[in-house]
Image 1: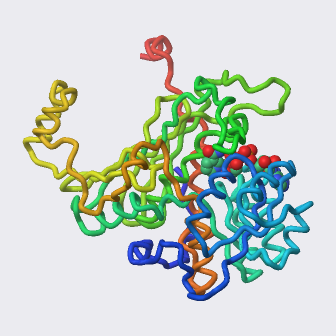
Image 2: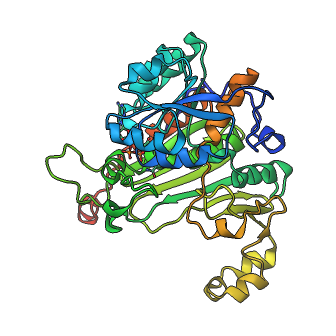
Image 3: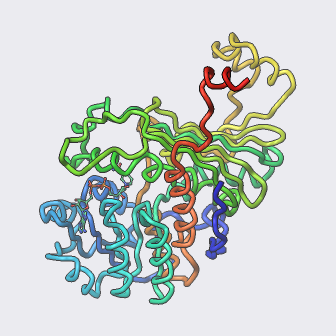
Length: 417
Ligand SMILES: NC(=O)c1ccc[n+]([C@@H]2O[C@H](COP(=O)([O-])OP(=O)(O)OC[C@H]3O[C@@H](n4cnc5c(N)ncnc54)[C@H](O)[C@@H]3O)[C@@H](O)[C@H]2O)c1
């Protein structure tokens, strides 16, 4: 068990501010010029950032840089701005206020450090860094330079997470006790990921994703929801393992697969206990369930910012009925006993077209929050401290390995008795 340090969440911002806040794209300070953004790393996810920046007229891309110049040119063709010849040129550009770091995880710390040293605010893709020393140093550097640091994922700011947060706070399920959070992303290596590409044709970096491993790539989504809802993490017990080693990563490429399965059991400062599972082995499951004394609240699509939220109130009859497998399997019986709950009155109401989509994330929402924080002087909701805390938990789970208590074989036990 790892005790997570208390250098935590100094933002002091109640995320519920978002529910009353302005998410329509108007700048927090009316009449201001759009804040200039410099994108570093123009790969797969940059195409999604570029598309979602269209929802945020208070932000404008001024410059982009990638080691592969053609990629920066592709982003700039979508958004306007200029292509920088190197990182230094982008960092010298006075029109760039926020550097958005969309490089691969191994480059995150280096790029963020350079940008903070240049006096720029930074919004980084997750994870903040691959090492606690580096992550901590970045948070300190931002403070020392008097600039702001924010970090993805931003799904905690979406309607689904906010609706669950508000329902829990309102007491819809009584006192929350337990969370089951799943981030099984399917056996990616069996899904021809080398054919996946963004709408602009940028290939999905499947080799890098599998090498980084499921925990560092994905645990941050549910962890950031839980920290928002239940406060700081106090302890983490982890287990992580490479379950299916043959992922087809090219030999001699220097890449080897990271852990593809992990479980973390966490306790939170408000007494809630959680079990978080990540994998790229088990079939797709993105559920998030909060179980309280009087019911449970859940969603089944944590990468959909406006996925429906369901609330099930416990009844003795329903709890007993579900112990019958036949009731579990037959939809009509589930409905009669209300096992799937009812839509929360706080539920997001997406337009029908969006309901057909697999994922829906407004990637630029986190940058918009950072911009508002810069303009108003408050801390960003997705602050560096927050990311440091989440990174500590992710690393504790991923580095936990696969257990230290070796159970003697039945034969050995027989001899001993
Ligand atoms: N791929 C996804 O589905 C997804 C979704 C959400 C978040 N993310 C996160 O976004 C980040 C980027 O992922 P991606 O899918 O776009 O990867 P990618 O490999 O497609 O793109 C990364 C880009 O960064 C560039 N780069 C790397 N080091 C650089 C450096 N030092 N200077 C300049 N450019 C550099 C690379 O040339 C590449 O074009 C990762 O942290 C990932 O975890 C990815």
